Amino acid sequence: MLTIVWDVDDVLNDLTYQWFTYNWLVEHPDCQLDYSALTGNPPHRILGTTLEEYLASLDAFRITERALNMKPNPVILAWFQHNGQRFRHIALTARPLETAPDVAHWVMRNFGAWIRCFAVVPTRTGADVPIYDLDKGEFLKWLGRGDILVDDSDENVGHAESLGMRTLLYRQPWNNSTLTTDALLQGLCGMAEEC
Image (cartoon, rainbow, N blue to C red):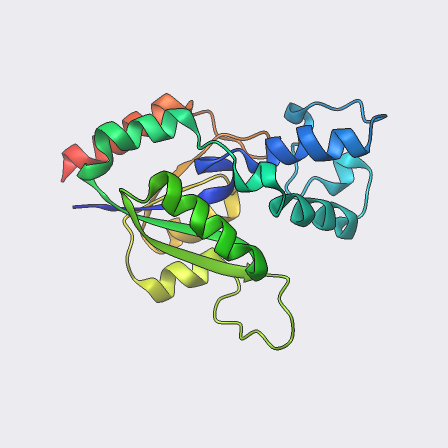
C-alpha cells in the first residue's frame, strides 16, 4: 500500500485564499489584486509590503475562528471518502510551531479517518526550539517513508523528487502546475493501480 504525504495549507484547505479574502483585503481596502495575482510565494512583493508584515498578517489569521473552522477542500475530501482506504496518509505542514496544535486538530477533525500521522516542520522558531529539519525535504529524508508527495510548493516537490518520491504539484497561482484537482486525484488512483 502506497503512502501519500499531504501538504495541509493550500492543498487540504484554502488557507491563503481565506487569509487574502477575509483578512488582507479587509485590512487593505485599496488593494486592487485578486487571488490569482498571488504568483509568488511568499507574495509580499506582489502585495507591496514587507515579508515581516505579510508573515505577521498570515500568522495572526491562522489563529482566528475563521481559520480554525475552515472547510476542507471539498473535492479532496470526497476523494478521501471514496479512495482514502487504498493508501496510507501522512499530513506534513511547515508553519509556526505555536499554530501546529490547531492545524493538527483541524486535520484530525476533517481527515482523521484516513490521516493517522501528522508532522510539522516549524518555521520562524525561537532560540529555545531545537531545529531538526530546515524544510520538508530534510524531514522526508529523515522519515524514510512516503511514496508520493502532494504539495503546492515547487521547492518541496523538487526535494521529494530528489529522494525518489513521486510527486503531484497541487495547482495554485504561485506554481506552474497545469493539473486540475480532478486530474491530480485521478493520478493518485492510477498510481495505486500500478502497485
